[in-house]
Image 1 (cartoon, rainbow, N blue to C red):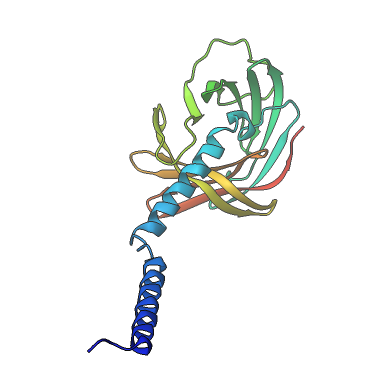
Image 2 (cartoon, rainbow, N blue to C red):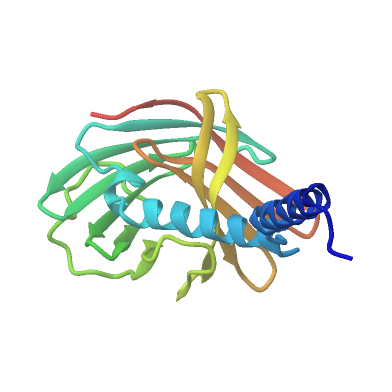
Length: 224
């Protein structure tokens, strides 16, 4: 017995609906599973981008050496922790800083290059503001060095130095400074941290030894 025309039409409709339903199911996109370590990868990428931004900045911006610039630091933990710094003389890539802590006045000559800032001369007691820019170097203390990224480490006559942060935040009487470079100085019996802010210079120094902590924190400054 042949199927009636009505039966054929019903069968064709059912087949058409089935085919369309299958196509719709095929068009549904299966969500791409996100790897469990996706947040960590994003953090690493962001960290790399931040380090690259810092690396592109000149070292001189973290250690301004323009003539007449001054910094006043408030000390805690030691009577000589408070001190004043002033840039007395500048010529080409050299600058001389006077530092007065109320007990003595010292003179330091710094030399800057694209790769590092080095103290090349130091006089522990100097009360006459003598110009030492042309003096024979007697020191080789690298204060800051590229690359400016976490993990950069170098040896100096006064212990090893390592960049441990490039985005440190420091609260001081002179204000709150963000995105500071934190340098850790490790010696046999002590650890120090120095914080440098772009456009300002050193904003804080911490010295820790055998349970004793001495800090020098920026109170006022003037960059010429």
